[in-house]
Figure 1 (cartoon, rainbow, N blue to C red):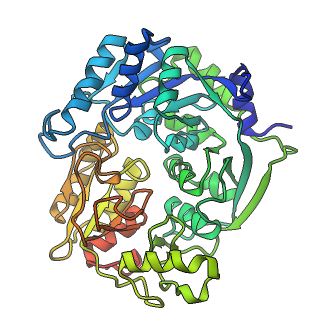
Figure 2 (tube, rainbow, N blue to C red):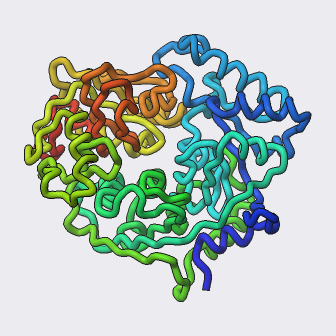
Length: 464
């Protein structure tokens, strides 16, 4: 009578702490260039070493430039972060996947892509979207800098066991509706706080039918739902997706691993703190209109009117409309767009780029449009180029970048300009997230690609 989360959690419990938290063993620890330098500094200050450097990987992704021909000094303010990450990894004996590595990429893309994360494993990462690896049935645990030091020094993490929620995705998806549309709808339907304090398991026919990379998109945005972790039970498609990857088990170990993964499911009589269901059969492509991930409407919808909302919500909606320069009741389709960004840990995997390229093929971006594609990893970039996807984008007038976080957070200086309206495949649309005064609309790769061609928000099915 156990949930999938219970099974993973119970297998990793080291013991209780006096402060009420539980000490959990960490199978893999992946750190990035934004939080690694201060963590390394704290280790030195306290005279501590890394407990299991063989289970830790350092990645450069947040601070790297994604322009062609980049170096560690392309962005001057990033250079110290990249150098301290490199020197710290060397000092503590940690594998570094830097910009010269064929395995470099966004931490949440490469963790499953390289099989650093595996079904049933615990994966700690100092980033709020650590939950992404739940798409393959791994338990991603987000940490802060202090917790990074604790994991580095002890290979354990102190956590309060969260409450549990199951969201059954019922029905079936229309051909043009994606995992990104599903999770945007869920957030818009229930709000960005509804899963606060919970681990969320996605179940039901839609979750099971999604491709593995789509499941990662679902779990990635559990953060924007307020949740602490996201999971989809692994199945044969996950095993097939992982087989032969760089750090996947080999030989007899592989067979034993696959057999063990078959037990990673929620028992039929397991009980959740919240058990919810949503019918996905009538969903259309979704897009955000405001400055909260819950500000979501379908592409055929209209911008909401604050005066028809509950009184407690009106001021927030008015602020969002003012910032986004939108009029209540106006159709969202047709709103002019200045820029498009396809990338991030949410939607920069090979399947995302293939989907966007299918919309773009043989067409060209609208006049004045600045459109960019940034692959989620160097491996994705290489695979995409082998398939000729880069040429499709370049011929259409897109920029084609190197792997990295880029405009998702903008901490590396890659931002929009004040007053620009961007359709972005990222996971957050907060005011100023992609640059001061930038207005961000979150959408799927297909919808973003269609906006680049049309020069406005548009249903990709209308792009001929």
